[in-house]
Amino acid sequence: MKRIEISNSILYIHKLFCTQFKDKIPDKIYVEQITIDEIKKIEEDKLNKNPEYDYDVNIIKMTHKSCEEAHKEIIKFYKSEENYKDFIIGDPDKLYNLIKDMEKLRLYNIFQMMVKFKIKVKINNDPKSKSFIYSNLLIDKLGYSKFTEIRITVDDDTNIYSTDLKELIPTDIENDKEEEWFEYLKLLYIKLNMSKKDIKNNSVKKLINCWGAYPFAFSLDVTVCPYCNKQYIEPIYTNKGKMRGDMDHFYSKELYPLFSISIYNLVPVCGFCNSSFKGTKNFELADIHPYRESIDESFNFKFKLHGDSIKVYTKKNLEPGVKTNGFDRYNDYFKYEKQYQYHENLVKEFIMKTRMYNDDVVENLREKFNIYNLSSKQIKEQIYGYRMDDKDLNKKTLAKFAKDILLQLNSEEKNHDNIQLTIEERSKLLEKLNK
Image (cartoon, rainbow, N blue to C red; front, side, top):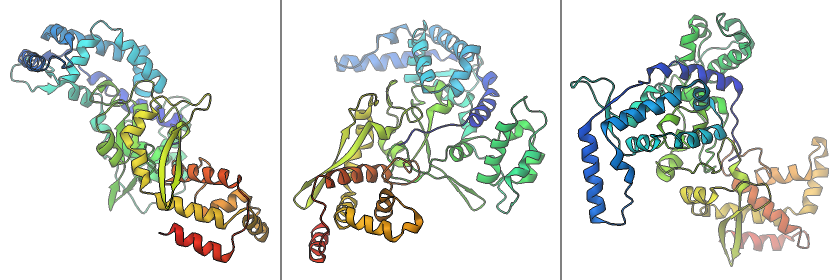
């Protein structure tokens, strides 16, 4: 839930990987006319049955010729010198601007219709040639399928130091890119257990083709789902097994296939958030973006006591300068309140510890262990088992929830008489909270 950062080394390698697919995207396609006719009939039937159906009048303009021209216009825009780099490694703001620029193109509406209605196309005019769903063709030609493949041989027994890898940096790399290559080789060796021998024997092209979803997931150093903060997504890559989180497309690749390989559109998340909650639903262009803002800053978890029960809820952060665009959509997609209501026992535990370990007790502990030079805040974090800041948000499950609840508790505690509980009072409190 804390903003995710991508290093310059990773941006550089991702660009090298994607560039090799640039010329594989066909400049011309051939549309199956029968597909368009069928779609028009289906849509018109829906409109006849339901006058309120969301019928797009642009469908009238769809012909095999207009579709082929739309593809040509969009791909020319995509491959242009000034746009291609932004499509591949442009930050969220640049992706947003690309969408706005595409919307100004003459045939962009037709392009969207081709994607929306899964128009079938061919890459040559041979009647016997294979046809493809248009969006799937784009996604494949852009290199996303290759990106998700596993192409690295693992050596679990390697034990050289990472500094030795400087000797293995290819000699035919671009000028002034040694640092980027060193960081990349460290990633392959240390995180993915690629052997020194394989690194040494591979050409620049083969090393670039080792890039993909696994190296990318390792490079981000995000071990917890940034959407829900409840599931671990730490990748594992060994001879005995491989595992990683899902790769969500912030802008759905079904709607925006040209962003299918855009690095700032790829968000490593848990399977629950990707499949069960978000699915193919889309974020809006100006929504909070995990590579641009910290989702954590847009809201706080809160709780209310109702007798012996606890109600968990969310509260949007209305402080000046804090971006909350789309938080309601996040809350709707990922069901934060319903998900976290299951953790009311953790709230009870925190309440108990806050009352038992009041400021006097914490100060006594700090003095007793003064050799460690711990602050009162650090003592409390040891007691709770969670930090009260954002340092662990991308590293530890429930860190966001715990931080917010603890800050609420400690703030409210300061408004009450800070009296140390007697043994009898502690027993009663434990009994009540454990009901």
